[in-house]
Image 1: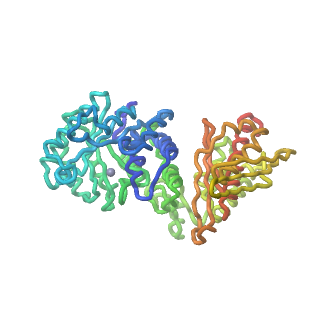
Image 2: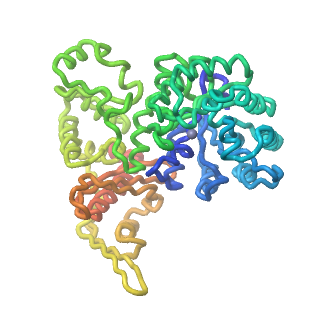
Image 3: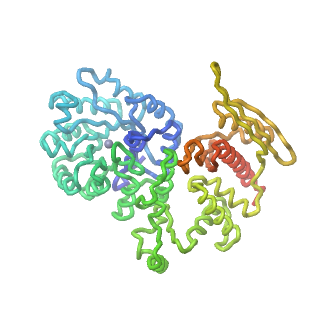
Length: 533
Ligand SMILES: [Zn+2]
């Protein structure tokens, strides 16, 4: 991997610092899926976790090896070694070696307050720990990115010591030395001045890791780059402890589009198009509503409502837009016109190899149907298969290879047992079949019964796996009778697709999304075999 072609390299820490956000918990599958999306985006490094701090991260480093990544290198995070124990015996360092990464990110203390009162070692010992840790990992063939924790606070109180920490890491041959504003309290003009001071005194490549407690993480990151920093750390949607980290969704387009700096791998600016998608994908996995006003990627980031604005934008878009929305995969929303929606439908059809005219009836009907479903609480942006199925239906293509005529799902608990059962009656061309199965819960039982009923007729569906199942409450005012949205991601080893459905019955929404997901795969098979077009 050649990172030299980049002006600035990006280290994404959504899976490590982002996972420390209050209210955020990623499953192993979530972490792997996000890894794949970050690779498509083209970040240089993906900080996958802290193997020394939790078992889920150890599992992740094992599992991530089976992913084929094109652009990104997965790196492990950890602390400097403990005092009074040899590097060889330090459990934290060993878990980094066990994770078999080529690069480790090591954080060490740069603020005397932390060294004396938190770590409780002497200032000299802290420098030794930093040197020994980096040296040990390098002697095992790893590259080390050194995060100087609390660097800015440390520099303000004792600049000589903070600089000594950097120089120690430099002597130990850390590849990049990252200046961290761990408490997020530093203001932009201070970052400006301090980075310039440091630049004159340290030769190693510098990085920036900014937190957002003052609302300045993005600004602080950019001013550091202006001053020659070549490595930027942040997270998708600015996830992170307390008020979060620098939001890469804002940092990346600022670097690439506005500052003309190459920050993403892959063809120039290609990855930028994934920004909106990856932002919403992470929200979907978290069951969070995307922020409609998020810069660059929010649904309303390019919405023009006032008559004067709409008129001006139609004449010349730059009149009220700071960038062309499609550069970051977003779209303009003109509230008096549906042009943008038509373009989006045509774009989806193109992905399936179909060329449609802007005024064609299928486009009109698909658009109407999407609007109706979205009014009912559907969120179709990430559910590509659901959109394609609507489109196919309106093109007169048969989309129901099978149909669930009846389903029943139940769960029962008594003193000894907890069990769930599902039953379905399915109609395929001219045939009715019935199946029944047990499952972990009623949704799983229903899926098991459904698979039993359709696999005999459609054996290729054996390859289909359910990768993710998420339930989001659309209207929470009704407690346990709330209206919910189910989102299911399917995969068959080669492709992934997703469906969504809503209902005030969670099983009904699940059954609809399952039926659509399996039918979609059958439709793809027919397209691939040239049976449809
Ligand atoms: Zn942090």
